[in-house]
Image (cartoon, rainbow, N blue to C red; front, side, top):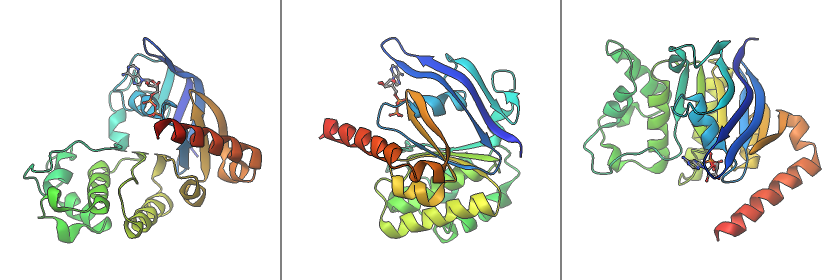
Length: 240
Ligand code: ADP
């Protein structure tokens, strides 16, 4: 299998904090990686660097063996679903409009219908996005991320504010994208059970990478799981 992503010695310093410190890992094509770590662990910084939004890092980031600082086309291989998609609730855009905004080549109009069907939102295509439930909206932004047929899908903790039924649908969609279409998935989540169910690899990030390996190895190691749970619990207490 090819290396879909190869991160080597990635370090990102902000004026007051080193957000990532010498992080290295590889994601093989077809992997489903769950990234777990408390708030402030550097997950968004990692994604911003991978997406080319933050270029101040040292180290290298490669997609399919191409250094993203040297290859201008790497964005075509990635679809990204942000944590909180920014949109105006009263913005008069429909579901199709939003997905179309993700389309790089305007002649691929048929692809919009195809991806809307695949994500169970084709019937909603003419609805305004302000009228949608959290789960429907989540699928719209996944459709937008997938409309250009990326090989890698990156999702930043997208489950908050979504009802249980939509979460199950979301999980089955991710599973299908990964196992049937071979899309490599990188998903940051606070939900350990969900990561356990879906991901075949786990990365634990807290400024440095303190674990990266197969899910089974992580979840069968009580000390590791406990360590993570304690870290996230402390984080939780800080916020309440
Ligand atoms: P996470 O996504 O895991 O919550 P972030 O990557 O957002 O973590 O943040 C990692 C650390 O870097 C935090 O201490 C945060 O305050 C800091 N940080 C993030 N973005 C910036 C920025 N643009 N400027 C300065 N500090 C930042």
